[in-house]
Amino acid sequence: MNEFDYHAPTSVEQAVELLSLDGTRPLAGGTDLIVQMRERRRVVKRIVDLKHLPTLTTVTAANDGWVEFGAALNATALSFHTQLSPYSSIVEASRMIGSHQIQNRASIGGNVCNASPSADAIPPLIALGADAVIVSAAGMRVEPVEALFLGPGKITLRRQELLVSFRLPPPDPDSASTYLRFTPRREMDIAVAGVGAMLQLASDGKIKNARLALSAVGPTPLRAPIAEARLRGEVPSTDLWAEAARLAAREAQPISDTRATAEYRRELVKTLTARALASCCTRSLARQEHA
Amino acid sequence: MKAIDRFSVNGDHVEVAFDTRDTLLDLLRDRIGLTGTKEGCGNGNCGACTVLIDGAPVNACIVLARESAGPSITTIEMSPETDPVLRRVQQAMVAHGGAQCGFCTPGVILSAVALLRRNHSPSIDEIQHAIAGNICRCTGYTKILTAIAAAAGMEAHPNGE
Image 1 (cartoon, chains in turn yellow, orange):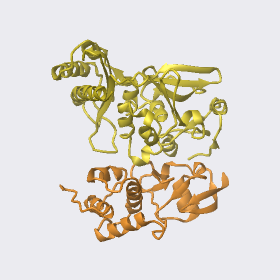
Image 2 (cartoon, one colour):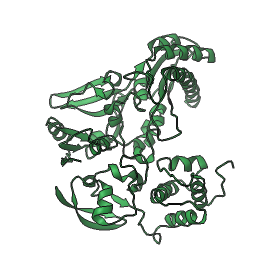
Image 3 (cartoon, rainbow over the protein chains, first blue to last red):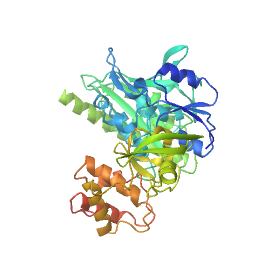
Image 4 (cartoon, chains in turn purple, brown):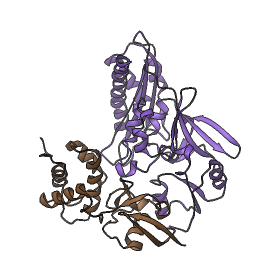
């Protein structure tokens, strides 16, 4: 690695000021950044360690009921935090990233900002309608997570901006989410296709809202709006899942590469979407029973 | 660039001179002389460099030395006299043939210790998941799984119970 300065600021203002300097990168778990630096894919002159900033490492419930969690909190701690337990898809995804060793360091902020098309944390955040809270010297802005991605490894954040936290809509007993992915190996692998799904059921049992996010089948994570529209207002059924799954597969934009062919990825989207929707439905009903 | 800082390693507090580019793995092996932790891949995939930071397994090759002065670091050199879980895992690995070349072994053992500290009777699935970040080229994993299950005090057969 080349020489670099290391800073561990204790305020977000200090962190943002440092990030505006050329060649500066934020450090949370380092499971992407340190690897890139060691492989000389990134030349970094200055590292800003985010792990000593309370805003970036805690979980809070806001007055409006939204749950906010720090972008630098490690995946393990996040997945076991009681306030995150209603958001099943995030809990599941956090426990799929890499391995225990990776999860004990890796952060959701890092997973999002690294913006791999196959990132595990992104489909759940999109399916749940999460927002990203972004801070700079100019102030704070909030952007839906799904609007952050420009292409593989590319996000809308400018260099002097820091993604400090994520906000999740208030936990809803009528909603449930699921994240499923297919990996060639059981563990420690990169998703060849991933589906994040969220269903909200009305009191008459029909689907009030549906959100689907597909990963690893396009240059950025994709919503599947045609499949979602097909689901809204309908009574849950296995046939409905199958139909939505077929539509979602058509909305995917996969390419063929060394990991899988486009055709296989499309087939995986179909299978995973049907399973994810069924899972959301089961979880939502179970949640209603316990409410 | 040179730096000096205090680190907590295996219960001892040590002042160490290091290079600011060092990873925790470099610090442990080259600056402190604890060579039990190995470098396999150098990019956080194989787990040969697994150490515990505040009891949690991490890949030392992608943690900076500069961010490691403060938390409690545990390596394979920790004393079995003070840790019955470690002792049981070590004895079981020997008894069940869980090591061949031994290169992955320190990392495997620390992952197993972390598991058994939080889960006294893990299922085979849970054991497999706990060592999923520790790659072994030699054993085919079966005897490692049997050893960890034995250390947990269970009789278990990884190929179907």
